[in-house]
Length: 93
Figure: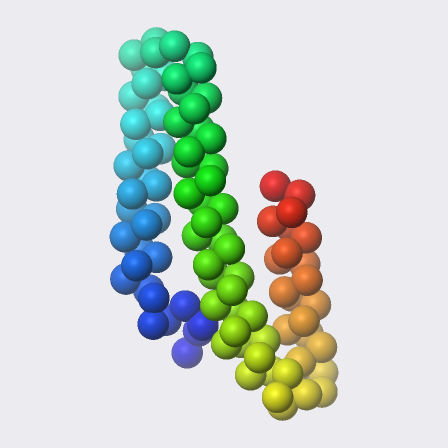
């Protein structure tokens, strides 16, 4: 079981809303909407994706990493490395 399993429906709904935002962006470009309006919507979609990412990261730390930490050993070390790399990717994006 993954850390996000209990929230899977909520994540799926949020991702579907983001998908709709992206389709709206495509439509805006196709309809030659004002650049700043498009950029505003890009920013909103980016923030929405970041919110999903942070939620997934929190779930991963609270479930997968915490579980591995209680077991210790190389599995715990690997989970911590994965989490650290994921955080680094999020910070760079």
